[in-house]
Length: 287
Image (cartoon, rainbow, N blue to C red; front, side, top):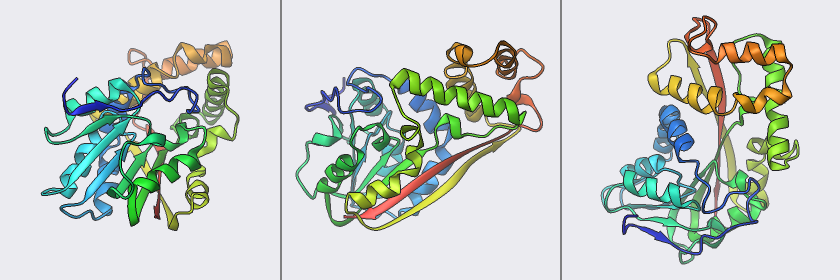
């Protein structure tokens, strides 16, 4: 691992809702999503109107794509620091980031920074992983300067995405996904609606001037290569594959697999009516 990547008290077993530990590796899926959602994510970062010289924390930086975009916005003279629990993510983010960017492997609940270190904290698709998200937001607020912003983001879960095909098949597939997540992680239905909880968590953590904005990540045919790769690999193969067989009838599973198979004439991603919609919510509050 590069000398720019440091490990600091990163053992967080028992603190995460989805069982994340330093050994969990979502790097491939995170890269796919960041490339897929780059237009929307970069627009959200530009809208923050960051200034050169600012110091920004990306808490839950994943493989580092947003970390690099944040660093670009505060240059020259600024710094974007990345933090992630997983060793594999820290290694990937370090390789992706500029040579001067610091990436730390640590638990955000015990972030190794002095109080009031950052002008802005960016935290996307991370808080919902915590068993105690309000405490996580409070920990982030502690390392932010007084009067600075905390930006919390969450993309909608797979069961809340929309595709252009038979409404009944979409409904039973989404319910199968919900049941799969409940069984695999021991989650409740409430746990699966965390995209709608960010606002309440931010206010419960005593952030001020809290507001929310939801944008659509919308894709129609013909798809960009990045869109096709993400939908095929992250959703069609890695989520809607063999995992869903126990939760669908044989006929529904066979139909879904045909829609997900590039060799089948019914393959969804080449249909002229293909239309995909996913929500991305940003909640911003002031410390």
